Length: 79
Ligand code: SF4
Image (cartoon, rainbow, N blue to C red; front, side, top):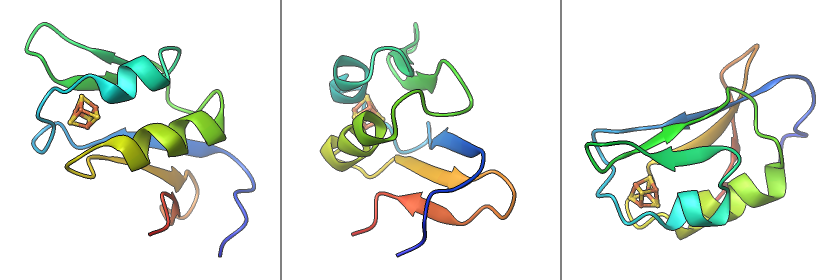
């Protein structure tokens, strides 16, 4: 497992999102639903890695991931 050191970046694959809203309910400071019913990040770096990881794990289509900003390596979720 890679240590989540340094700047991180939350990504949402909006082409996969089916608009359940579970992520925005779990991490409202970081994720929201837009007018098209799909999730979008509110900030580049996660405000709370644990919450974002939980939101990512709740996503039924695995659309949310967190990466190291420098290398792009995925740090969460790690299935
Ligand atoms: S949990 Fe996944 S499918 Fe649901 S709104 Fe968030 S990104 Fe979209």
